[in-house]
Length: 203
Image (cartoon, rainbow, N blue to C red; front, side, top):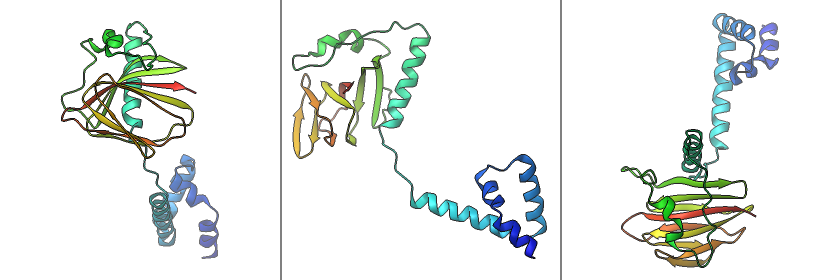
């Protein structure tokens, strides 16, 4: 019995549950668990404890991560397949929708029929600036950027961009720049999704 207690307290079972035991150790532990109910019960207890800990400390991921990750993969594949790298102009107060017609009129720069809440197609990338066409169905969740300035040019639809307590009501052709360190989110106010030229510029 003392030998079983020492085995349980050795830390080997935690390694097994975490998947860090060697194949030889795992095989030995599984044999021991089959022969000794105390070891099987301890493995079950460790698994439940880790599960409870992970649930208690879970962090909800930023909802913008997946769409922009998928857009990055899509852009990389397009470049790999021969698309010419292009350099959309930086959005400024005088920017016009027509400045981006080269990309907006492309047959492949369209949103899918089953549009998710947020969808993006990257049209230009450098280490200093990423430019994308973005469709927002209802809203984009709150974000705060500490190392990049975010700029918007509304192409279709209308939206409110709330920066702190300030509400900016935007329609097609309007531009807006988000200051660093300011929490902000987008709420679509039109029946149709809001289509935007979005830029993230390294600060």
